[in-house]
Image (cartoon, rainbow, N blue to C red; front, top):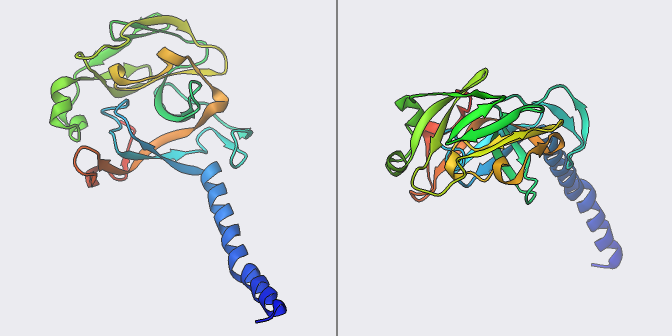
Length: 234
């Protein structure tokens, strides 16, 4: 094969096969970057709502539209609400995290012996139903305490872990404009806004709305089929 034939075949391969695949890949990655995504959850900081090994669906159009592969906003049509589970870039180390919005801009947030206080009002806690703990393993049921937290306009599950050292008292702290106070549902096992401060609105990627797939880390990564395609809204 002479040089002319080689260049001709290489050009044909590029035009007919390689370039279309690259364009398709770019389009798919752009869609994932701007419209929808998933996020793996490796820790138990959101138990019992989200378990270790869950892969959650992230709606990136929940609040705004961003330029692909960036956090630059093209348009905004909403803001996170108290109780939303959101994915964001941590101000501590830049990693993507999944936490719950607890404090909105202008709110004053405080924690008194595990009791959340928002704008001077203590949040109410109630017993949790067994249905909400169906996927929590027996060890965690023994070591943790579970309840439902009655946030204004929203109710969700929370956990405490009495046997470990944790930040059970915090604040009060007033949330600055354009920022949000994030906490994990597993309060004694969550590295969140109590430690590294509030999150800039521009760092919020989207809203987590469902568990797409789930794998049991403590049992050879066996799928938890009952959690697949389950909603995160309680």
